[in-house]
Image 1 (spheres, rainbow, N blue to C red):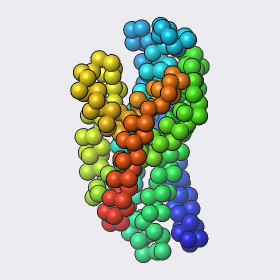
Image 2 (cartoon, rainbow, N blue to C red):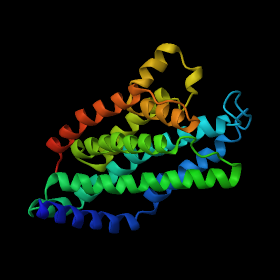
Image 3 (spheres, rainbow, N blue to C red):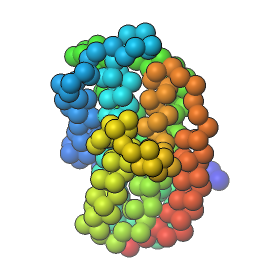
Length: 251
C-alpha cells in the first residue's frame, strides 16, 4: 500500500509539472467559465430579483450554476482527456508501464489534477462574478460543497473513461466533442431548463451533468436537495470507474 501511495504521489507531481506548461488548459478550465458568466449577465432579466428568493437573481441561481457546469464539462470532456492521451502519445505512459506504478495510481493522479482545476474554476467564478456584478454566494455553503465534490467525482470519471479507451488525442477530442453538445443541451446550459419540454427536462435530469446542474441550483438558492441527482451521480461513478480502470491503455 505504501508503495502504491508513493507511486501515485510521484505521478501527481509529474502531472503538475506538465500542467504548468499548458496555459490553454488553465485558461479554458478556469478563465473561460468566468467570461461566460459575465456574458450571461447581459441577457434579458438576468439582473432582476426573483420573487420569493430574497433578492436573488437569475444571474445568481441559474447562470452561476450553469457556468460551473460548463466548466466541469469542458474540463472533463475536452481538456483532461487530451492531456492524458497526449502524455501517452509521448511515450511517458509506456515507460511508466515498466515500473511498479499501478494503473489506478495514474488515474487518481489525473483525477487530482482535474479536481484542482475544477476548484480553481469555482473560486474564479465566485470572485469574478462578485467583483463585477455582485454575484451572491450559495445560500447553503455545506450543501454546495457536497454537490460540487460529487460533481467533480462524476464528471472526472467520464474523463478517465474517454482517456482510457481513446488511442489518440484526436479520438479523445472527438468523443468529448460528441458528448459535449447533447450534455450541455440536456443540462439547460444551451437552452434554459424551464423552456425545455417536460420530457426533455426529465431526460436531462437523468444525465450526469443535468443532475449536477439541478443540485447546484438548489444549493445556490438554499433549497432542500433532492435525492435523485445524487443517485444519478452515484450510479454514473459506479458504472464508469471500473470500466475506465479495466480498459485503460498504456500505449
